[in-house]
Amino acid sequence: MSVAEAVSGDHLLVEQQGDVTVLRLNDPATMNAVTEDIGRALLKAFQAAAKSSRAVVLAGGERAFCSGAKLTGESTMGQPGHDTGAALERTYNPLMQAIRDLPIPFVTAVRGAAAGVGASLAMSGDIIVAGRSAYFLEAFARIGLVPDGGATWMLTRAVGRVRAMEMMLLAEKIPAEKAHDWGLVTRVVDDDAVEATALEIADRLAAGPSRALGLIRHAAWTACESSFDDALARERAFQREAGSHPDFVEGVAAFKEKRPARFGG
Image (tube, rainbow, N blue to C red):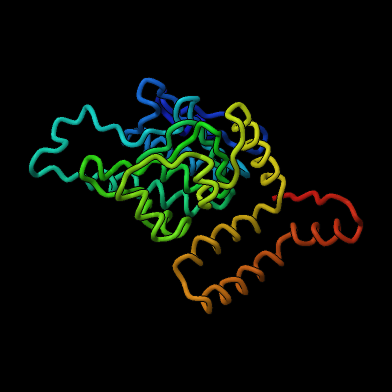
């Protein structure tokens, strides 16, 4: 099944560009606010891409990458007895865990607003390309909620506890340049170059040693919550696995022959 066949709905577009799957949030009227249906479609799309592609790009629109979860339309929202966290357990947490566990590189292309769980989606990229109009906003405190989508975990590791606290407690916009200075994004480019830059990076990653890149992702995510000794042991095990893959044989041969490697993935 192709990635496009795995996804239903008009608000998530899928395009295959060579070995790269490009996913695009597409609901301009809500600045790409996500619903549980969109969350489930994203989960299916990532799972399908992991089997059919060698890299994934997630993009939004010109005005917004993603403005967060759609708050309107649910009659019980904010009413006594409503479990606001249930949607996380049902949909958004499995989505973020699937992104963490991807065996292929993941690039996010951010223009405009990346707010709420949209900020979490943007921050979960291995490489995060931001346009000059981009900003990150942990707006939860404005409505009496707690950051979700793994934001508390990712923010404290990306920018440190103090800056993460400022973002979450004050709920102020962090513009692209500041986000870059803080280490929240990989690079900042002109808005009209965001997607081309993200795709160029994804193409480069897709041409790389896929199994080794997947192991690097796994090692890096796990290292954030393990001891130094655990990281050393994991590196040893992963190096054995990577070293037995044909990509390593090709990489060494290319190095010796002073030519670009042709990795098979």
